[in-house]
Image (tube, rainbow, N blue to C red; front, side):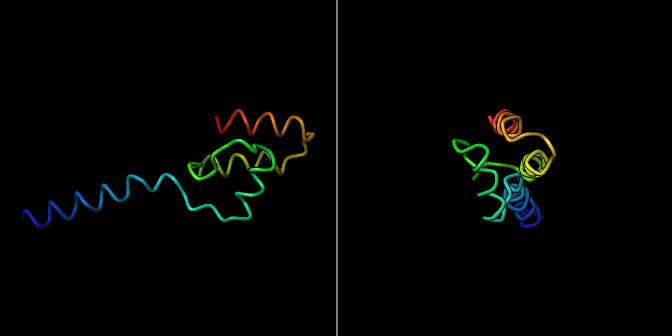
Length: 73
């Protein structure tokens, strides 16, 4: 029983860090073009998806940069 509990605890601990995704490098570079000072290594899947959605929108580049920077603060 202790082994099962310990295994579950280890699994839960490992999965708790899964919010920070391994974003493909091409997407990281795309995000960094719009938010060069952002630490993209800590961007979650959700933040990356939102940032890429903003970047690929029809807004002008200045607005996109501002929105992505605000998102990743």
